[in-house]
Image 1 (cartoon, rainbow, N blue to C red):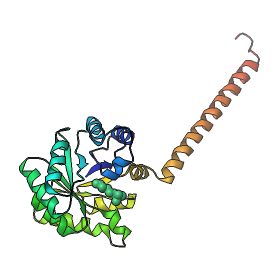
Image 2 (cartoon, rainbow, N blue to C red):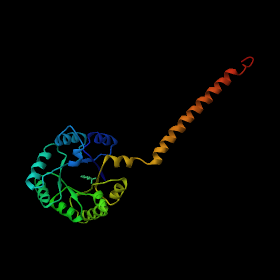
Image 3 (cartoon, rainbow, N blue to C red):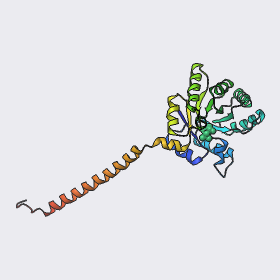
Length: 237
Ligand code: E4P
C-alpha cells in the first residue's frame, strides 16, 4: 500500500521523506493557501525535487477548456505531476482528454462508488473518495472505499483507489484493510501512527533503567577499587 502526504508544506514533506515511507504527495487549493511566499507552481516544483512519486496538482477551473489549460501547464512542471480534476461532467471530459494525451489524473471529490466507476472509465489513474467529509455528515465514508476497491478488483480496472480526507489513524487502518491502493494523510495523522503511549513510556523507562544501571556499576567499581587500595599487602607479596 502506498502512503502519500496530504500537504503543500515543504518541511513536512522533507521530514516524512527521511522516514522512508513517502510514496507521493497530494495538494489542493486549501492546502496551498496555508503556505506563503511561493506560487503554487514553485511549491509543486520543489515537492517534485523531494519525491519522485506522484504529486497531485489540482485545477480550479470548472470548465473543460480551463481544466485542460491548467492541467497541461502543471504537467510541464515535472514528469511526476498528476493533474487533480474534480468529479463533474466537465471533469470527466477533461480526464478523458488528459488520458488521450498521456497525462495522468487523480479524480477528486468522489463521494460514491458510481462516481469512482465513471472516473475510472474516463481514464483517471487515481480515484480519490473522501472518507472524512462523508463521516462529517454522518455517512460511513469507508463504505465507498470498500465498494470502489471491490469494483476495481472485480472488473480489473486500470486505476487505483486513493483513500482521501483521512482524519485519524483508525481511518488509515480501515482503508488498508479495505484494500485501498493508496492513502493520503495529513502529517499529524502520520505522526499519530508512529506513536503509542506504551511505546513512548517504554522508551523513557528503558533510558532511565539504563542510566540507573550505569550509575550502580560505576559506584560498585569505585567501592571495589577503594577496598583494594585499603587492603593490607601480604608479606612476601
Ligand atoms: C486530498 O487529495 C484531498 O484533497 C484531501 O484529503 C481532503 O481532505 P479534507 O477533507 O480533510 O480537507
